[in-house]
Length: 491
Image (cartoon, rainbow, N blue to C red; front, top):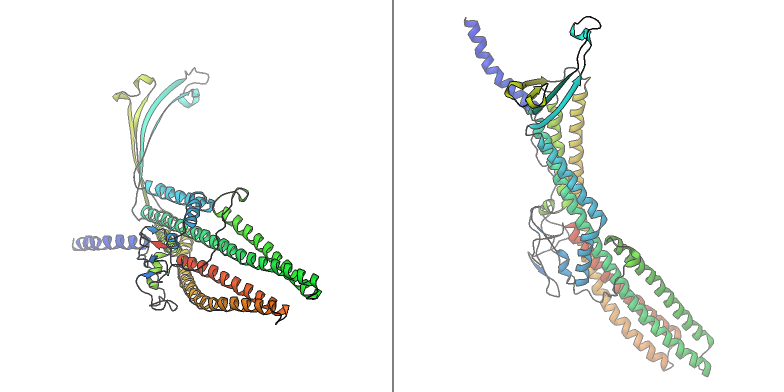
C-alpha cells in the first residue's frame, strides 16, 4: 500500500514536470534582438545640433524613434513645388511600388489564413444519394430482386485543432512577422522611390544649369568668331586666330549637344519612376543656379538608425518570423489533438430530413504524432534554426551597411561643402581674368591664345561649380535616405 501511495505521489510530481519539459521542448525560443556594435556617435557628424536651419530658413529636426511614427514629407525641406509634384505623381503610379504594395496584401492575407486556425472550422453539407446494392451484399439469394433506395441528408460539421504544443500560435507569429516585414519593405521601396525621383530631378536641374553655362560660352564664341572674321578681312590678324575661334565654337556646340542627350536620358529615367511613357513626358527647364535651398541635415545618434531605417526593421521582422518557425518545426514532433463533430438529419424522404426522429450525430477526438519519419522532422528543426542564423547575419550586415551609408554621405557633404567654397572663389577670379584678357586682346596687348585660355578656364570653372551644386543636392537626398527619411511633420 505504501509503495502504491509513493508511486502515486511521484506520478503527481513527475507528470507536470514532463508536461513542462514537453512544452519547453516544442515552443519557439524566446526572441532577443541580436547585439550589434553601435557607435556612440557618427564620426562624420561633427557637432550636430538638435535642430538645424538652412540658408532659406528651412528647418529640419532629427528623427525620433520608433518605426511606428508617421513618415514626414521630407522633400518639402527643399522648398521646390516641382519636386513635390513629381514625388506625389511617382507615389501614385510607380509600378515597383505597386508590386511592393501587392506583396504586403499577400502577406497580410497569409497572416489571416494562419489566424483562422485558432478558431473552430464550421461547415454545412447537404445532398442526396441513390443506390442499388447487389443481392449478395444484403445476404439475399442470387437473382433476388432488390429495389433501389434514396437517402437524403443535411449535416452541420465542426473541427478544431487543440494547440497543445504551440504549433498554431507559432505559425500565426511567423505569418504576422512576415506581414510586418513586407510592410517595412514597402516603406523601404517607397523611400527609395522618393529619393530616386529627387536625385534624378536634381540631376536634370544640374544639366539645365550646365546648358545655361554652355549657352553663354557658345554666345561668347560666336561673338569672338564674328570679331575675328572682321579683323581677318581687314588684315589685322592672320587666319590662325580665326581658325582657333571657329574650333572653339564648334567644340562648345558639340558639348551642348552631348549635354542635351544627357538631359533627355535623365528625363526618360524620371518618366519611368513616375510610371509614365517616356514619349509623353517632359520636364520644364529649371537650372540649379545656387545651393542656398539645401537643408542642413543632422545625423542624430547611430542607435536611432536601428529603428528608423525600414530595411533594418524588415530584417528584424524576418528574424522574428524565422524564430517563430522553429516553434512550428518543434511542435510537429509532438502529438496533435483534433476534435470533430457532425450533426444533422438522415432520411429516405427529403421532408423527413429535418425531423427530430431522423437526427444523427458523431463526435470524435483524434490524437496523432509521428513515430518513424526517417529523421525528417529533426532535419526540419535544424533547417529552421539555420534560417534564423542566416537572418541574424543578414540583420547585422544591414546594420553595418546602414552605418557606413550614413558616414559616406556625411563625409561627402563635408567634402563637397569645402570644394564649393573654393570653387566659388575660383569662379570670381576666372570671371575677372576673362574680362581683363578680353580688354588686353582688344587693345592688342595679348595674343588670342591668352584670351581663349582665360575663356576656356572660365567655362570649366563655372561648369565645375554647377556640378558641385548638383552633387551636394544629390548627396543631401542620399543622406536623408540613409537616415530613414523624414519623420513627423517638423520641417
